Image (tube, rainbow, N blue to C red; front, side, top):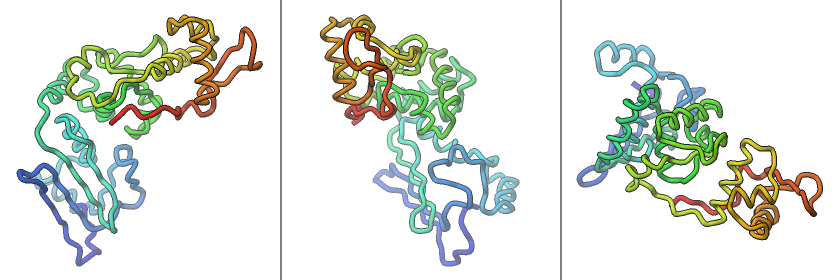
Length: 277
């Protein structure tokens, strides 16, 4: 149904890899149809290469309704604790790799529970991607989710808010846009957590970053109160954030009492070491 029949010598090649098989690898002749980008597969409306054939197969019961294939692959893989599908162009073909293996029954039960606690998120690919990403990283912000879930910032923010209402995520600080997995969810998925603990500095930066979601700037005194530090410790932390990492910049004067600090232009991609393995 999806192959390019203009490649008369092309063949659909399917490999089941492993003993027993844990990976399915499918190569289909022809690249993506015009207008379909590999990094926007979740966001692109279905564009069947052979619409008449697709319709016929649907009528015969061999194909599901149009436009749900990619979502279904993502949902089923993530639900069972596997990596998301790899779907790329390779040598003029479309290559799809599904890496499976043993089903994580606890992960499956957790995702199935979303249907009961948050019915509006049942079968929502973006919610599944958010939970899966929070098994790999401590903090998730809407901008990061929007990138991996191929959606707008507002849609990503709505997903994280709805997960919070269901008790699955929580804000690092009130009114901030820094989310982490809520403690009950962390306890249930402890075996899935694949990140190393934050350093003290990284924890402090995340708190300051969350504070600045709802405040335009921050002072040394506010840093000290927020992080429960002495004035000297707060000053050293700010010095590292400003001079060492370039994450904050002073507002107006750069020295003296009463200096306030705001996010720098580079704070969207902080110079912190990766927290995922």
